Structure formats: structure tokens, C-alpha cells
Image (cartoon, rainbow, N blue to C red):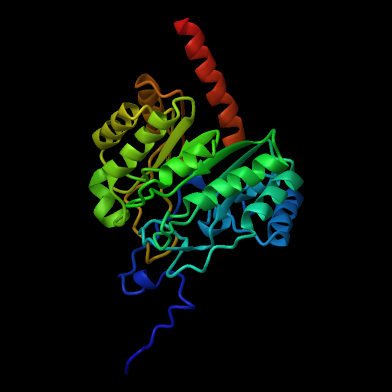
Length: 317
């Protein structure tokens, strides 16, 4: 008998034939309560009313209850279908739909209605678009500036691989923070992030600083994917060579049995050790805890990032 796979109903068709891997039981230090608060429900209703997508839901973020209760959400633009097939990620994969031309205005209205002082905008990868979605990113930034001029904007972008000129379009739109995640150490790229190139991502972050030295840059990785400590330390050095300001490190959590397996749960003490090492290497700000995610406490972290820069500049004066 032949089974016909209906790819329209499968979230990750490229993973359907992967062997199942056991999802490890989480240790006590990484468990969170299910979201049930009034603030969470209000944020969910607002997101739904504007027809928006959040990476909080799509990626199954463990911090969604805490963040949405505080009216914090990371908007995911350009649809909910990604053209990459990273083995760690729970975002839907396949052939995306056409861009929604009304999306920038919708995001701008939602940011104003939520009264956000700081907003994070991310996206799926859109390798199908000539510019990788760079112009759409710029339009979203402009829309937020128009409706909420006092709101600071952080973007978490794809790598714009083989999209000449795309990065320049995004940087010209002047977000306050440019974030692009390395996700893992280079030895894992073939199995964890096969569509990306480690040194291209490093160069992307370095190029942002060349285009606008005043723009904050940020990157993050997951641990618990079999990496060695010395590999993480070397990655830190690579990021500092690119003048990256802010590093986040969090525990990888396996979404389903079809995703990359958790090698181990890194202890809180090990996270603190990584944070100490990163601070010693010169990052303006470091967040390294089991539940750290790219946009976790992003508003608070942006204020700390700006303060850290001012202190460093004052010390050099």
C-alpha cells in the first residue's frame, strides 16, 4: 500500500520521514506554567483581531505566558511558512504565500494599540523573494515609526543569503537593534541549520556595523545540541570580531519527535559560566539562562544595552 502525504496538512513535510527521537523530560529549572492570565488572553485577542502572526506561538516559545501577560509579543512578518528546513525550528515549512501588502500598516496599528515602548519584529526566511523580504522589513519599520515615533524597534532577520543589496535596504530603514541569530556552533550547521552558512551570518552582522556604526547588533545561540564549550567560546570571539554588542544563549528545547534531539540540558551554573566568559570578551550585554530567547525581556535589555554603551563611552572620554 502506498501512503500519499498531503503536504498542505503537514507542518513539516521535509521531516516526515525522519526517524523519531525521544523528547527528553525537562529538568525542574526549565519548567514553566501554562499561560492562563487575563493579560495573556488580551494579547492573544489583540493579535488575532489584527490578523497577525507571532513567533511566540509559531515557535512554541516557553516564555509566551510571561511575555504576553506583560503585553510583550514578537511579531513575525511575511507569513507563517518558511522556505528553510532547520531541524530545530517549529515554524511551518513549505512554499509561502504572496506578501500581504497591508501587513506593515496592521503591525503599525497593533504596536500603537498595545502602547509598546519597544517592539521586536522577526520573519520567516523568504528565499523565494528577490530581496528576501528586505523591502517589506523596511516598510514595517517605517509604519511603526509613523504610528509610534517613540517606540524603539528591534528586528530579528534572516540571513539574506545570495540577496545582494538586501541588507542595505534594511539598515537604511534605521531599526534601533539589528539581530541575526547564529543559532548554533559551526560544526552543527550541516545537521541543524543546513540552509545557512556560518561565516555568511558573521559577515552579515559585521556589515551592519560598517553601514551604521551606531546601530546596536545582537546575535543568539542555543546550547544542548552537542556543542563543546570551546566551540561556544570561539563563536563568542567570532561575534566580537564582527563588533556584535549583545549575545543571548538559551537552552534548546525539542519541539517534536521529528526535530533535532536534545543532547543534554545545560545547567544554570554552566549558563552563568558562559555569561561571565562573554562579558570578559567585551560584549556590552549578555543574557545566558536556560529560558533565554532572542526577544525575552527585550524592552528591559534594550534599556540596559543603551546604558552600557553610554557608560563605556564615558569611561573612554
